[in-house]
Image (tube, rainbow, N blue to C red; front, side, top):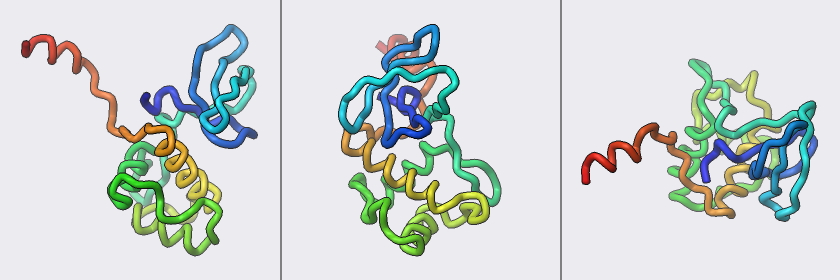
Length: 143
């Protein structure tokens, strides 16, 4: 499963897998408790593949931040918890992204990134690379 199908829904904890779109919104399943929820069009829904973190030079896609965490943790869950104190969270994030914009990336954002990474890791979603277009076509030609 790719980050294109994983959602963060405003006002709801955790992450959700998009199941289907409806006329009035979408149906998603919680990765935490597997409960299905209907989300209306007016709800604040973010697709993880569309989220970026501010750095001093550019906006870095969340998938790249997850890759950096994965590299630091050697594929394991994070060594800190999202509920750790502010200073510890900021130090950890600085190790991952030394050039993150401290004025525009809040501790609440860092908490979400760490929590989301750990939820994804728990559910075996650990391939954060950019999906490649036309890979199937190239593989078919090589045979």
